[in-house]
Length: 109
Length: 113
Image 1 (spheres, rainbow over the protein chains, first blue to last red):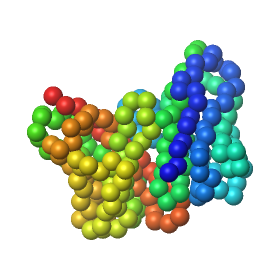
Image 2: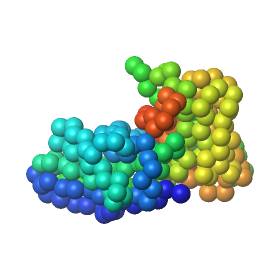
Image 3: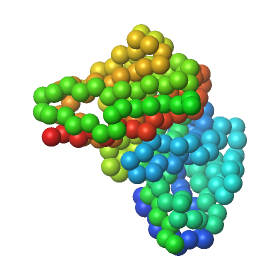
Image 4: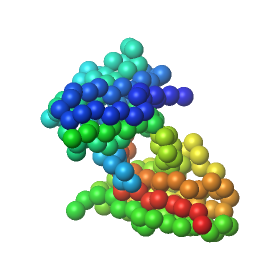
């Protein structure tokens, strides 16, 4: 059974910092990996999706990488802003989706 | 606007009562899903359906029931057998295939009185 771990559970940074969120998984037989953003009391918004054959995806200030051999993915956020404050979840898709518990990010002005 | 809607936003359940959470999508997706989210935990799959009139149990189906009479609708009933129903419930939908991305609704928070 796929196990997904996200470290750290919470992170607080000053505005403008670059930061990395980590996601590790136990089963590399996946279709894709997806990073989501969740604001308090809201649903999930998809940020980036990396197919199994890809190494990374970029969207604006966000860059996600995938290393299946080591069972790791990172989400890099450049020049963080207070509006980036949210919980970030990674999910592995292999016919069913397995979610990590998320990293709660706070960007202080 | 295309998307997934869930209602109500908040729901209160009395002990011994069954309550039903609504999920509707107009994305023409064949597959629909129900997840439960508890604080500090990832989403856990309750039930899913890949076609009308068919659905499958997920990891934590006990105490829950679903129906899929229409492609657009996938209501979830939290029965009195679910002893710890307080949680945030998320509905999602997707096309059917290998590794299709899921689109999520805004969620329903269920609280027990």
